[in-house]
Image (cartoon, rainbow, N blue to C red; front, side):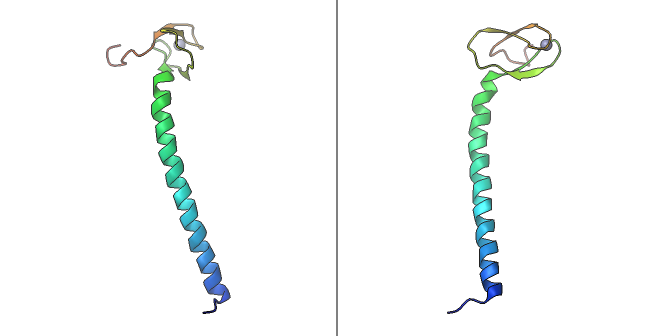
Length: 79
Ligand SMILES: [Zn+2]
């Protein structure tokens, strides 16, 4: 069986499309895991609502914007 140029191009396009789709799905899946992890390090200042990520383990973290103290692991609903 011999491929014409059109068939060859079509095969390449569909093939690369499938590869791209696969990469998108995999990267999204990996990104979701990273998001979940970094959620514990993510802070939103209770005073100025500035959002940032803190890599440390201190219980009290100061807001880099206004310097207000924010408690780690505190539920936003409870305030
Ligand atoms: Zn702040």
